[in-house]
Image 1 (cartoon, rainbow, N blue to C red):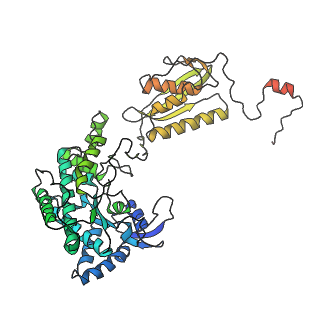
Image 2: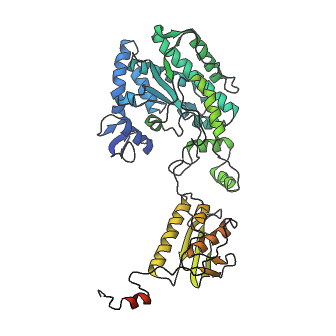
Image 3: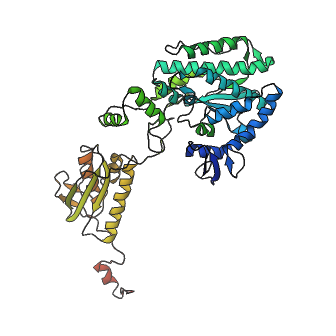
Length: 477
C-alpha cells in the first residue's frame, strides 16, 4: 500500500488516500471521487463500507462468501461498482458494475471466460442485494481494445468484432440468468437478442456464449441489466485504458509512454519499440489508431446484446487528445541563417528532431532596441513551445507571413526569399521554404513606405520635440 494525495478532478482539493502501491495516480483520483466523505480515504475501508451491508444480506440467503469474492474482484482490478454503490451519491443513474476485460486475460489460457462469467454472477448478486426493488441495473465491461491487444486480435478485424459479440453474449446471458434465478416473477419467454456469431480459434468462449444464451432461453429476466456506460471513476480505478468498446485513439498514454495495449500489440507483431519507431519514422503506420468506421462496426456488433449503449459514434465524436510534449534530444541538428531585411540584420537559428522536423526556433536581432529584441525572443519561445506540443508549422506560417510592420523591404543573404513585409514575415517565409517544401505563401511585396520601427518609451521623434519645445527628459539617475 502507499499513501498519497489526489483530488477527484484537477480543480478539486486533494484528499489523503491509501491504495495499493502498484496503482497509478489515475486510480488515486478515482478513489478520491468514489470514496464517501471528504477526509482520508483508505481503499479497503472504503470498499468495506459498501461490501459489508451486501454480505450481511447475502448470508441471509445462504451465501457466506460474497464479501470475499467482491474484495478479490476489486483487488485484482477485475470489477468495481459504479458511484451509486460506493456512497449513494450517484447522479440518478442505476447502480452498476464495470468489468475490466484485460484483467481476465491469462498468458497461458488467453481469455478466462469461466472467471469472467463468475464475476458477472457476483456483480449481479451484489446489485440485486443492493436494491431488491430496482427495475434496472447496469452491468457492463470496459477496455475491450486492451483485451484484443493482449489476444493479438486487430480491432478492425471480423475476428475482433465476433470476439466482442461473444463476450457480450456471455455477459448478457449470465446476468439475465443470475437475476432471473432469484426473481422468478421476472421471467420472460425468450431473450430478445440474437445468437452470437461463430468464433474460430476460441472454442471455450464460443461455447460459453452459446450456453449462456440457451440457459437464458429457459429463464431470462426482463430486468434491464446490461449496459455500456460512459467511462467514469470505476474504469480509472480498475486501470482501464479505453472505455467500453471504444478503440484506443492514441498509442501514447498521459505519461508520454506507450500504453499497455500498444506494447501488447508490438509483442504480438514480434517487434520492439525501437523497430516500431524506425518504421513509423519511415512512414509505416505501425500503431495507427482505429478508424471511425471500425468503431461504428464494433458498436453495431455488440449493441444487440446490451439493454443500453452510448450513441453510435459519429464524425467528430473522437475525443481530442491532450497535448503531449515531444522533447528534443540533447544533441540536435539545425542551422543558422544570416540575412538583412530592409537593411536590418537578423539571424534565424533552428533546432531539429532526429526526423528533420523543426522543434525549436531562435531569432536574434543584434542591432535593434531592447524592446524589439525581447519581443522577438518571446515570439520564438512561444512558437518553439507550440511546435514541441504538436502545433503544425503550417499554422504558424499562415499566422505570421504577410504581417506588415517595419523593418521591411528587400532581403539580402537569403536566396530563397526576395522581399519581406516584416521581420516575422521573413522568418516564417524562410521556414516555409526550408521545412515545408516552399509552402504556398504569396509573394511578400512590402509597402511603398514601410511603417517606422516601434518607438521605445520616451523615444520621441525630432518633429515632436519641435512642437513641444518645453518638454524635457528627466533622469532619475
